[in-house]
Structures are given as structure tokens and as C-alpha cells.
Image (cartoon, rainbow, N blue to C red):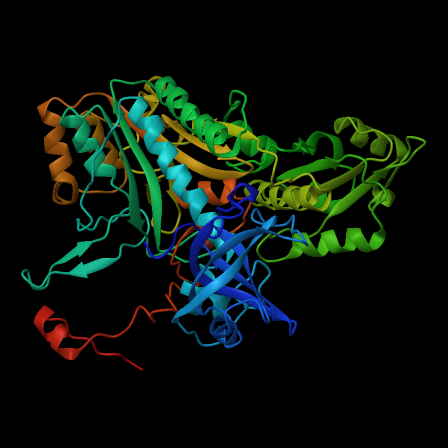
Length: 584
């Protein structure tokens, strides 16, 4: 090794030792008679010192040529610092340099390699290899490493076996868009990159591998946002001979283990909520339960009083922002503008304040008597100083909009602390969703999800009412994992394909390998997949998953560092027999 110690290792007990350090120059300070260099590696920072008339003149001269991010090797003696720095772990010592060597000079970086940098997102992504030198980004990847190690440790202890599944697979019509890969040896035919290893892990269950897991890359060609990337990582798991209860207990145990070993937090048992209750009380299948403000339906309280907006609405529903009656007219106008944004979709906002004397003042006083407003307050179980916020319109759209308003109020009132963790299982999702555009059902999760046994009789008579044997894990309003008990019977799986609009021939062409496998003794099985990048960002207290991925893509799905995707040579296209003609 070129070094004897790392830049985060030395302490007072090392005083007097001769050591050799290597790393990057963070900064240097030349005071004439004294010169100090902060030397950085991934383990920390150590201060080097050189003194006029004491240090080797050659080393001192060389030190004065150092720029930011020069790679150097320094040998010297550990001494106690006169002026200590309690902000770094090595702040009690410094290295009195005897020899110095420049291993590689560096251009001035385009942004500061410091915790608080002056580089914007685009610039830092273009020079991602420099951004990765910054402590916050490095710590994010170290957190990811610890979580992967602890995931493997827990699942290995539970008897799971890690199996790699193929990356070049067959394109399927369900779900998001596939990334496709042309086959040179099979002209005109294409592989797809997997959106998940779903069918392969089910085949592993047929094969007798009763506890499988994989920390696996998946690919989806879909629109991007802060918590979405074209390639992402899942903790993918499947088990045989299990019930839903077995899976919930096993993977609640995994997440408790991760919080305990990685963050030092002991979580209580996870509450459970049905999909129907989640939508009714929160307007979301992934509610943030760090705070209350559950929905209160008001049709029976406010309709038929002459206020047309409420009278004509399919649903009138609201939340109680407890203790927020002090909100000013300006703040309420801001909330009204918020709910009218296209991405929220409400047409307006009605509000009511409960005064200190218990009386109620609202934005629709002319339509309602004081007695009517008291009934409104009673519906919310409101107390003096509470603020009531009400939306009206079509049921689904209004619940969605009120969910957004609830989250906004939670943020404004400081109720969404990133260091507080509220967990939840959401159960009993609908098996199918009707799509008006295609005039057919779509699987809410995927086509291999089993109906709840007690709903099997509804498949032929009322398929829209069938509940899925499916479950999502939600933490702080983020869906971190989801799964289901799978169909393991060929006849039931074929019926599911019928409901989804597949002809018998299409189902055989797309999924015949799985249907055939079910005829060779497929065990009852189920599983779950966690969004690993999303779980890491949650543990790290970040809104974006980018800093927990070494080399992420931007919002356009581009890697601006290596400039990908890019065109390829015509010779390659000819070999693949692909005719690319860009039409203007």
C-alpha cells in the first residue's frame, strides 16, 4: 500500500508515530511562515502542516504548488494540534510533514468538492465522478452498502437463497414500456430488459427453491421524476407454501431489522389498513400517517342548503387542520391557488374557522345559518382555533385533490418530520381496474396476482368487485414495497388472462412457458418486492433517489456524464439489420 493509514483514522494515541497518507487536496492555507493542507480520502480529512525553516525546503516548495484535488502522498510524524477542530474526527492531531510527493496534479474542478457546493444539479451530474467525492454523496452510497449487507444477512438467516435471473428476456404487453435490445443472431427479433423478475421467480417456486431473493436491477421506459429512474434496484423475494400473513410477518421483520441495524431505531408492529379505508380516510393508497387530518365526508351535513357548488357535487369532503384558525387571508388564498393547480385539480376551496368562543365563521356564511355551521364543526369534532378545509366535486378527483391539500398542510404545519417514521400495511386492493379508453380491465398490480379466496365466485359475475390477495408496505406516505399471493393454478391464470382481454393464442404466445409450468406441480406461493433506491432515500432523509445511485440519469433519462443514449455507427445498425430513418 502507498499509505500506512487513511485520512480518517489517526487519533491522539497515534502521536509520535511516523505515518504515510495519500489522498486529494481539499484546500491549503499559506500564512508565510506556516502552511497547512487538508488532505481528504473517503474516510475523512487530516491536516498536514509544514513550517518555514523547520520542514524540508523541497517539501515546502512543492506544497506551495498544490491546487485543489491534487493527488498527493505525504509522510510525517503525528503531533497534537495546538488549535483543535471538533468538526472532524481527526481534529485533535495533524501531520508534521517530512516528505511530500505529487502523484497526479489536477485541473481546477468546475465546482467546490465540499459538503455545501456551488455546483447545480446538471453540472454535478456531468462531473458525477467529482460529485461522488463529496461527503454527503459518499455517505449516501455507504448507507446503501450497509442496507444491502443487512438485507442479505437477514434473508440468509431466514433460509433464503440468492438466485440471479436473466437480464435479456421476452417483451410482455402489461405494465410499463420495455427497453428492447435487438438480437444480431436473430434478425428482426428483440429481447427486453426486465421490468421485474416476476415470472422467473415464480418458476423458481415451481422448481422447488422455496425461499428466493435477489437484489436486482430492473428497467422501465417511463416518464421520470425524483423517485423514479429508467434503471432501478429491487429487493425481490418469493416464497412457497405460505399465506399472506407469513409474508407480512417475514418482511415486516426485514424492515424492522434494517431500521434496528442501520439507523438504531426500534419500530413497533405495523398497523394494517384496507385499500377501501385508505381511500376513504386519506384519498390515497399510500397515506402518510405521521399526522392525522383524516377525511370527513359532509354530504349529509352541507347539501340542499342552496349552495350550488355543494348541492351539485358527488362528494363534499374536508379535513380539520387543528389549531390553524390563525391562518391569514393571504395564506388561505395561497391554499386556494394550490388546490386549483392542474396537477391537483380542484375548482376551489371552502374554509371555516372555529373561533375562540366556539362560533364558526366561513367563506360561505351567506348560504349557511350559525346552526348549520355548528353542525359542520361537529362533523369534524372541531375545537376552538381549528381550521376546516372543504373540497367538492366528483368523488375520485376530489379525494385525490384533498389528499394533496392534506399533505401540503402537513408540510406547512411541520408534521412531516423526516426523522419520524410511520409504517403501514395496505391490504385488499381491487384485483382489476376498468379502463374506459381500451374498454377492458387492467390488472391493478400484475396479471399473476391471486384473487382473495372468498371473492373467487365474483370473477364471472362481478369482476370489478374482486379483491386481490395483495399488500403494499407504506412508510411516511411512500410505497416502499408491494406484492401478492400468486395464482398457481393454470385454469385460474387462464381465466385471469381472459378478463384482461388476452385471446387464448395471445396468452399462450406471451406466457405459455408459465402456464405449462403450472401443470407440473406448482406450489402455492407469493412474494414481495421493495424499491431499494427508494428505501435508501427514505433512510437517508432525502426526497430524491439520485444521490443513492452511483451514476443516475437525469429527468430526461439521459446520462449527461457519458452522453447516453447516443446514436451508433451505421455498420452496427447494418449488422443488426435495423433501418433507422429520422423523420422530420
